[in-house]
Amino acid sequence: MTDKPIPFNWPYMTGKELYYIAESHFNGRLAGDGPFTKHCHEWLEERTGCSKALLTHSCTAALEMAAMLLNIQPGDEVIMPSYTFVSTANAFVLRGAVPVFVDIREDTLNLDERLIEEAITPLTRAIVPVHYAGVSCEMDTIMSVASQHGLKVVEDAAQGVMASYKGRSLGSIGDLGTYSFHETKNVISGEGGALLVNSPELALRAEIIREKGTDRSRFFRGEVDKYTWQEVGSSFLPGELTAAFLWAQLEEAGKITKERLVSWQRYHDLLAPLESKGILRRPIVPDGCQHNAHMYYILLDPEIDRSRVLNDFQRNDISSIFHYVPLHSSPAGKRYGRPHGSLKVTNLQSECLVRLPLWFGLVEEQQEKIVNTLKKSLHFLS
Ligand SMILES: *Cc1c(COP(=O)(O)O)cnc(C)c1O
Image (cartoon, rainbow, N blue to C red; front, top):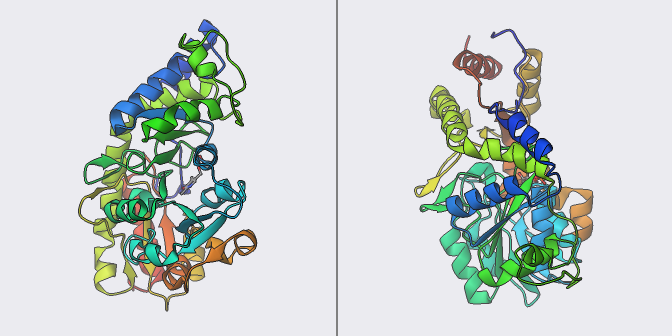
C-alpha cells in the first residue's frame, strides 16, 4: 500500500451515483431542473439557510451570474484577493469591471478585512471574499464595511461547502454566495456549482438570468401562462444527469466532511513537531470558524527551497503541489486588474505554500509516508 503512488486528489464516489443517473434515464428526464435538481436545491436551502439555491454548471458560472445580477458595469471596481482562482476575477472582468487586488491575512490567507476600507473608491461596487481552504473570512467586519459603503458582497465559497462562520454556512452570509462541485472539491459532480441567493429581491432575476433570460422557471411553476425573453441571460443550469450524480454526494456530505476532517487532523498532529522547530507553519483556523477539511497546506520557512521539497515528494511518488500564482502578477491580472498596496503577504506566502494530498480514503500509513518524506527532505530525520 505505501509503495503505490499517492495522488494529490482521488474523487470519492458514494456508490449511488449511477443508480440515480439510471433513474433519470428510465424516467426520460435529462434537461435541467428535474426532480434531482429540486432535491439538491432543497438540500442546499435547508442546509445553508439561503433564500434560494440554484444549481449551475460550475462555480465559475455562478460567479458570472452574480456579476450579472449585481449589474456590474464597465469601469466598476470589485475588491478581491489576488491569492485566488482565476474565476473570481474573470466573472467581473467579463462585465468590464476592474478587479482591485487586496492583500491577505497571514494566518488564514483570506482577504485582509482591515485593508478593504482604504481600497474603496467612488467606483467600488462589490467585495468578493474567498474562503480559502474552507476556512471563513472575517465576515462580520466585511459585511459591516460593505453596508457602511453601500457595497454588495459575493462570497466565493467554492471551497466552503459544509463549512461555517459563527454557525452560519459559508455562502449564506453575503448578498450572494457560490459553491463548486468540481471533481477536486469535497462534494462533487465532475463539473458543477451552485449560486446561493441570500437577498430575496434578487431571487426572481437569478432564475431568469440562469434560464437564458426568460421567465421559464415561473412558467413551470404555473405562475405565468407563457414564458418570454425578459432580460439578458445565458444557460447556466446543469443537466439532470449531473444533478442526479450530485444528489448521491449531497446525501453523504456529512460523512465525507467527517472523514476528511479525520485526515486533516492527523496531518495536523503529525506536523506539530516541525512547527515547534520553526521549519514550517500549519494552517490556522480562527475561533468561530468550522472548516470542512477541503485542503491541508503547510507554509515552509522562506529560507527553505520549496522546489527541492516538491521534487523529493515527486521522487517518492507523492503528488504534492503548490497553489495559486497571485493574479496581480499574472499577465491577465496586470492587464485587467489593479493591485492595492504592496500585497506583501500574498507575494511571500504564495511562494512558501505546499499542499499535501487529502481525499476521502487516504489512510494513516500513506499520511505517515508523506510526513516522513517531508521530514527527510527538511533534514528533520537523520
Ligand atoms: C474551484 C474554485 C473555483 C471554480 O470552480 P469551478 O466549479 O471549477 O468553476 C472558483 N473559485 C475558487 C476559490 C475555487 O477554489
